[in-house]
Amino acid sequence: MSDRLWRIDLSVTPELADAYEYALEDFCVAVTQYLDDDELAQRLEAYAEVQPDEEALRASVLAVSERMGASAPEVTITEVQNKDWLAEYARKYPPLQIGRYFIYGSHFQGRLPAGKIALKVEAATAFGTGEHASTNGCLQALDKLSKKYRFNRPLDMGCGSAILAMAIAKTWGASVVASDIDAQSVDVARFNAEVNGIGSYILPVCGDGYRTPSVTRNGPYDLIMANILARPLSSMAKDLAKHLQPGGFAILAGFLERDANWVFAAHRCHGLVLVDRIKVNGWQTLVLRKK
Image (cartoon, rainbow, N blue to C red):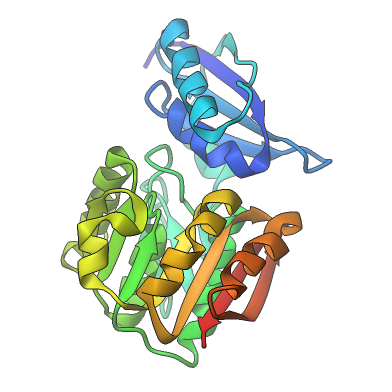
């Protein structure tokens, strides 16, 4: 391994952090996020083993900004001294236990805990390793629902790494449609499902939300998971309600507490009622049910 590394830093609004993290992944071996003390900005810190193409990197960040309707953040690239990043990562990111779920990476050398649902998800593949508060809230919601309900036809809209689709599949033994607009995320979802031995339970599809033929064909759903962003969630509320069967549940996440009522209001207009709110470090997860 080279004794040289390059660190990439940028600061963005928290609700857009995951989108920018994905943009950095083609240039880096690891990306981490830090919420500033005032919770108004999310800092992204990424490391590359070869000097990144600065022009291509800035173009990738600009493309995300234009797609999200946001101003492009300032990007800084700094050469730093290398270290044992695998050991550093293991120290900073030990396995997570969230309810009945145990999330770990390949760096974990311990014994998997008995009685827990193990999910192996590598870092720097697609957003969704359990570290983020919104993913944490979704896993808490699944844990709560599993104590009272059973689901047979679930959908993970905006699946990312497929950590939530895999949690659903392992909890209920159900086949999960895992949809994402990004083709690379779909490839990562397929890979993670195979690594976890549940490839036959996950149907990864790439397409434009609920217009995706496989999404339409496999509905209506008794559980829809959507860990995305406040604005697209609100704009897709009508489609979610259309594809959710009566009595079905929806778990919505990817937004700060201040945006939760706005997201809920968009879905309440289409016949969904509030069941639960889960708050984690300034982020909120909503559990809704169709009347």
